[in-house]
Amino acid sequence: MQIGAVKQLPLGTSDFAALRQADQIYVDKTKQIFELAEQKGRFLLVRPRRFGKSLLISAFESLFRHGTADFQGLAIEHLWQDKSADSVVRLDFSTIRQFSDCHQFTKQFEELLASSFSKIGFGFDPNSSFSLLRQLSDWMQTVPRYSLVILVDEYDAPLTVCRDDPERFCAIRNALSEFFAILESNDVSIRFLFITGITKPDIFSELNNLSDISLSPNYGALLGYTHDDVRTYFREHLTYAAEVLSTTPEALFEELASQYDGFCFEETARQKVLPLRIVTCLIPLER
Picture (cartoon, rainbow, N blue to C red):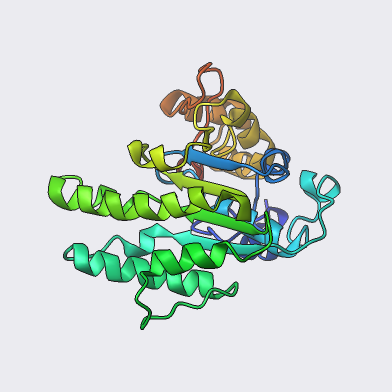
């Protein structure tokens, strides 16, 4: 099998537009993405690391910013009819997980919020007598109804790094809760809110209209690869690997499945998915 005969594996690419432009393999999850994005909803999805949460957030960002420009040939291309460009805020909390104390965390957190929301018109006044969160709340009350898309990736990253320090954990939790309380109190300004993480503490008591889809059978395979996904989208790689190992693609797949059969995340426990890194690491990559 020649090198040019197959698409590149999506190794380490978490930017949806970059993945599509590089013509890397993308397992089409866009029908489910459409089902979520067409709603004026607020969603939480909890998954372990390396299942593609950041790529999913990036796909939502691309869809709401640019429509179907990066989705040519995918299921959503003919489903998504919305031509408007929404005001999109993407917050990656993994960028603020390194801090020495609560004061440093607060500074980093406020800088992240001020920088991210400023891109869609929020102007933070550091000389004001009101806090950043108060200013943000006041600003959100001025924007058109249902005009904001807020995407929060790895919301719990600052919490997991201080889980062995109860005092610091509680302080960080309270700071995050204040932010989510602001989103709740300005719910009418938000068209779509999507939050990912690896845990679910009670921080979301502040968002009483948040739909937790983590165990939903409808979205059990939204992240990760099903067995059918591997057989379909990685067929050429399985074929090449089988040639290298002097076996058949089906025998190789059965061996792969027997060694790492996958995770079940939805409540019926019927759908098994493999994390992105496991699939690519189990297939010989040398050409």
